[in-house]
Length: 249
Image (cartoon, rainbow, N blue to C red; front, top):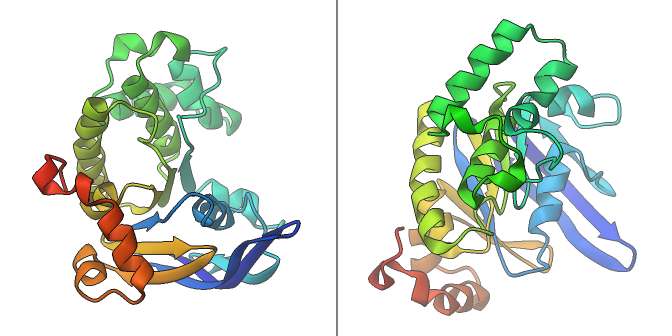
């Protein structure tokens, strides 16, 4: 569904991503993890065309992302940015339905889709008329997810979608999100800094360091057969978040 072929990106003097080869299989969940500044968000930006590679190429479902193709491709992607990224001056419903209205969907179709998404995400329909500042953190994240799902995209891209939430709300939304991914059978790419969260969601984990892929595979593979001492150090640094500390994996 998504392929990066020797894709690289530099910002000024900083090489954010060295040439990377990566394939995201249809219907699977790939989680990108690594320390701050390792290139996680840049990698996600390459996938949705918000960032253009300096070298190599990015392909979505057989189409190379270029200036000419990126707009059409983005309509087949749902994007959830950090802390939701909602427009504060319009209601939850207006945030969710923005692109559908831009594309000229009929009112009945918009209303039906909005109701279906509210039920899917367990969002109270009477809260759809509220503004983002009147919603809880968990509700704002649900609105961001509904907005990403509005056009029924083939791929969901999520950049630290739960990072700003308190632990209890984050725990509850993890279970809801994984159930939604399973029910919709979407291709999902998620960025997180939390290894336990990555293990909970991922079919495949991609561990980055300094703009390079150190290792990719399941959590068992990373733990039992680390490709580099950094993998072991990264896992050991997060041992406090493993199941014996009460956090779901």
